Amino acid sequence: MSHVDGVELDLRLSTDGELMLWHDELFTGNLPKKSRCPELMESQEIREMGVDSFDDLLQCKEFTTLWQTSSKTVNIELKVPHPVAKISDHANHLAKMISKIDSSLVELDLPKRSTMIYGFSPKISEAVKISQTKIPNTQLSPHLRSWGKGKMKRLVGSPNFISNTVSGLVKDRRRKGMPVVGMALHYLHGWERFVHPGAPVSLTGKGLNRLFSISQEMGLHVWPAPLKLETIMLEAGITLISDFIDPTIHSLPNGDVRWPRPASQPLDEEWKNRLNNADESERPDLILEATNSLPMWHELNENMRRNAIISDAKKWKWQGPNESWATDLQEGRPWGCARIIGHRGSGENH
Image (cartoon, rainbow, N blue to C red; front, side, top):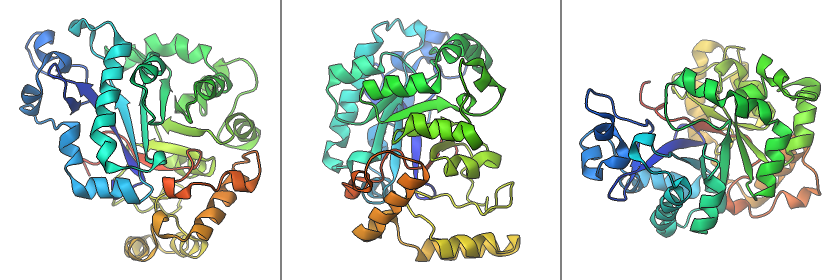
């Protein structure tokens, strides 16, 4: 949370109604699936597997203070149960999770643009209506089922990928009042983007201009985020859901400096030039110096924040008057601004 612009985490609902920080459908082992399914286990059993609850995380003041004050973003992915749990009403299951998130966060008084709830389930929109939450939310694409191995999941999800264009996703999310489109990189980069009808979008050139004309102020949260593409993805206004949050990575494959907080502690031009012109051996110390001297986003005065957002809006070709984007900046950066978000587990193995 301190090293980048925020984190992505996954939640599951235990059988006694606790939100648990766990991604996988089942725990590993030789026991029957029912004995390894989080939704069929009590929270204490899950804790004994080394897993914390969401409320445990909220007791960490270092985490919550950053969330409250530094234009950091927490993306909360809601997981639906494995079929073995026999919970078929996913809309109400997800709504219960959302209501519990609402209750847990109410005392933190978080900025409006600091939290994003999302999931792959097409029932997310219905769950939001049931829970009546005011937390920003969106659906991830392509839709992947809640069980199976990675390759099989992607294979089963292929028809959904093929049938949804970036333009279609943006229109659907905008119609549902969702400020962000969460999507796989294949929609924007690689040969897979050509399977859709019409002119493809891309991260550069004419395809990027098409992307700008489609997305406007919508946030684009994209995974994976390879280091070799990090610079052009950020330049395209994309929020990276990154697996590469090792603080010892100081340079990107293209030679650019690796600055991991473009949204919550933006580099000014002087520091950007100084870091990019430095030798590889000098960068670690210079990055530490920049970290200790540059202000965080919330420490910038209102005029500096306003000018930064207007500059971003022009770069990413948002429509409307400048002033329309530079409002409520105390609530965090607009969702259309690029961020680097640490994907699940990316902080555990460096």
